[in-house]
Amino acid sequence: MVLVPMRAKGVEVVRPLPVFGYDDAPHGHAETLFTDVTVPVKDACLLGEGRGFEIAQGRLGPGRLHHCMRLIGMGERALTLAARRAEVSHLLYLPLRASIYLFNRQARVAFGQPLSKNASVLQTLGKMRVQIDGAKLATLDAARLLDAEGNKSAKGAIAACKGEFILIIVRAIGLTSFFVVKSRLRLPPSR
Image 1 (cartoon, one colour):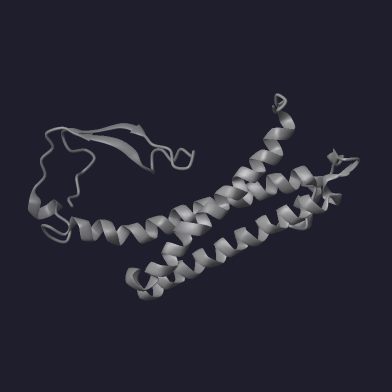
Image 2: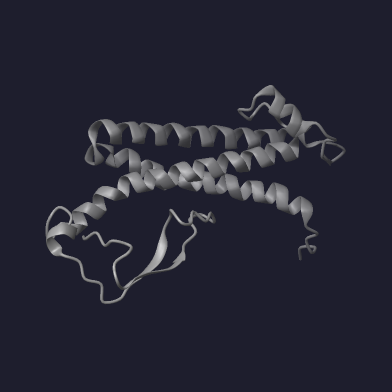
């Protein structure tokens, strides 16, 4: 693995790439072309020849945790939108002022009662809260292990975060989409 200066002749950044729908340009990932680029091996080679895979593997754990943290933030946002829709403020970690601002309007009504009175809605939102908190704690524990003991010791904790907990957050985001989007769209009748 080698370091190539961005100002080197032949390096061209084609376009920034979004991550989870967010554009981090100019700091994030980018599609880059290297055309006839030359760099001195002595100055540019990291850790020595033949150790590129080792470097890449060493970055995978922290990178995965970074993406887990981003997804947790998206899950929190999704829960906020769903709770706002149902006007259920006690599931959110908001100061009183913010919760009054978010929920100070007429309640959504389904089956003759506000969504906040529907036990099924409350149960679903409560499960989202518990699952997001579980994902948060697991990610914090994996990050603590990574910092304290290194990649090898944190391997199992990182695997737990990248596996099941990512699915939990994606389900939370999908559920919010169902709550929010379905209420705004006129869907054709199902057959």
